[in-house]
Length: 118
Image (cartoon, rainbow, N blue to C red; front, top):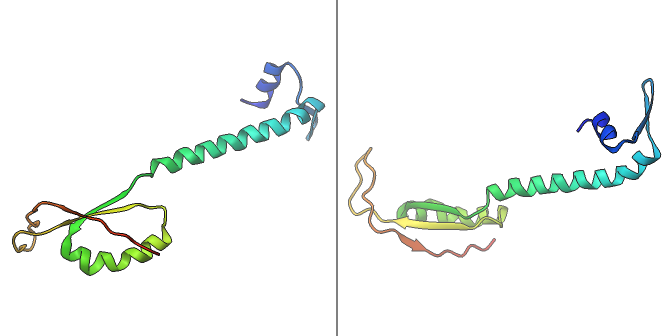
């Protein structure tokens, strides 16, 4: 709401205007802390709503070889930097050698429970 519209709605001036000089009226001074608190509450609520959008576990499905050789050695460092991210990993075992450009044949995914300590 614009200030003039708010003043009309309240039927009381909130500011004394004298050219370029503007100051709060006594009603404006009474209203100011409540408006500041309401805006701070709104900002916190918006931040919380944005944070919730990215919540949930980080699920990774990868070949067991890649998991063992590359990913697992890096997980402790990642978890230390991002302790609130729940990492869940599924390992896939190729049932036949992969040819270049051909995706691996997927066998049953075997969930692996991993405990990462920073």
